[in-house]
Image 1 (cartoon, one colour):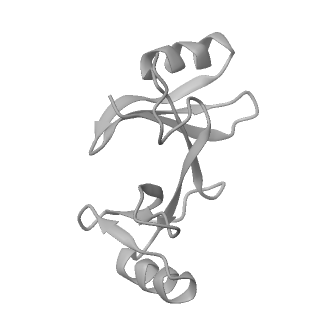
Image 2 (cartoon, rainbow, N blue to C red):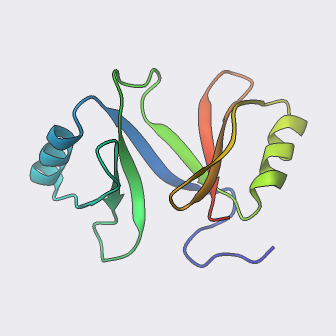
Image 3 (cartoon, helix red, strand yellow):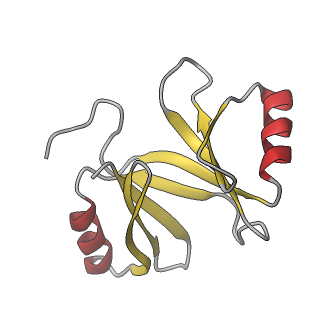
Length: 123
């Protein structure tokens, strides 16, 4: 499995915040911290890396309520199916099976303590 120069296999790669008002969240984070966004429609905006014109470092996802437990941490995987198998083998529970999204595929899992994380891949 080749290493993607922009992403490291199984490293923390992205943080996703659930917000109840996407436009207001963009305004707030833009004014407070200078964050820039990539719009993916009325339900999602990617948070651009503030250091340069590089990729995204996180996202704002519109939801009816803030996600329990706070932001969703996403890991990157060079082989999503192998990561699903590894989570199950290690005793984790897949809570959302792999699904496609603009940019690749991802799944969510709970660790043995119940923390939910996501794993994404470009393929």
